[in-house]
Image (cartoon, rainbow, N blue to C red; front, side):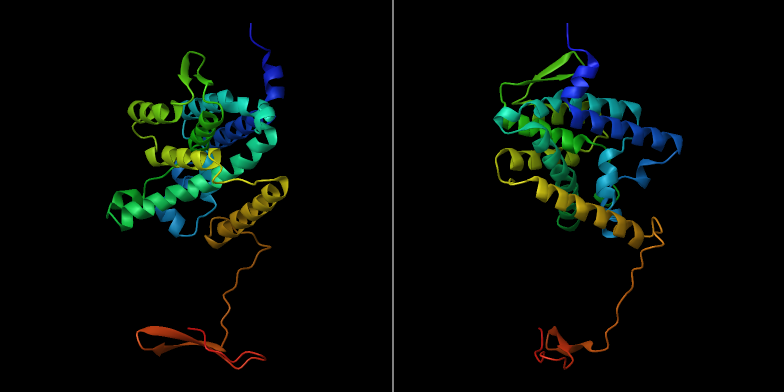
Length: 268
């Protein structure tokens, strides 16, 4: 007989909170009839300055099946919170969840940029990524590095050896759900390996809080600048300084700075 649910929730506070948050956001999206294109992340919206979508896309889901699949996998991966004795635990989980939300979103946009600019695949301009699976795949990958003998249980009946789970799940999801974001899942795996192998490390409470602060600032200002939400207490003004002017210089451009106190150089 397994442990009571409330006890498992107590043992996985961060995982339980994230599942609760994603569920509330899904409910609000359904209640207000918000389409995934309004909260998802795409190349077009990114270059238009909608950087806030890196966050909203991660915590939004387009259907109850989508939500259930991701949250079921996340619940199984919540075991990470109980592995403080091998350097994981609740703090590690929170710190690197923050890192994966941001980096996986940025990496997806980077991949889109490469495919569009280098390989001329304009189809990816409007492909919209939405869902928490980037982070799910990231934690799956980290656990496969830290605890290769662990088994991942999905939906109570599907058990996968964690060492193969990231790529098995990547292929399985792509076959079963063709509209799933292959690049989104792949970005989570890449960031997960970077963290698991120690290429990204050193997160502490100080750096996590600092990063969270910057995320909040960028989130609010990008909402304002993109015209998505009007924060009346924030004013963004374009500064035109007459002391700065561009003049032609050969094949390049030279920025001339007026004679300010202590400044008399040309910046090229």
